[in-house]
Length: 191
Image (cartoon, rainbow, N blue to C red):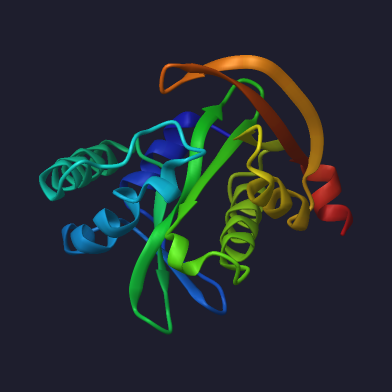
């Protein structure tokens, strides 16, 4: 995995698809859908960021993402629910470690779509992409202690829970215990 390859790849975001979802670049027209979930405290309870305080804040966020797409610095797909033709969240890479051939996956989903297996479907597709297209050796995901739903998603896609790091991250002014799960290339292709 070479960072130049990844930057070039994500500067022209590839479109991916599953039975129920389309993965594509975020667009300005996603403004209201993004604001709907990103302004909801339920969405951000276990995330590193606070709810978006205004529509203008969300608009500025989208502009930042679009500029990062151009330079290949932003590695998240917008997730579109096919049946509703609605942008319902994002999924992609929060960290790329070229030297060790590791990526970290992150995801967020509109709470209206929780409990339907869509996060599992989304994360599974990004894992497939990372192993088959980027040929990484290891994929990991982290979660804040207490977010059992996120850990369940990780386990459903074949990740193994590795443990917790006690109060390893300062999040919204409080130290949080962080859990990690991972899956290796050899495990993925064994199945």
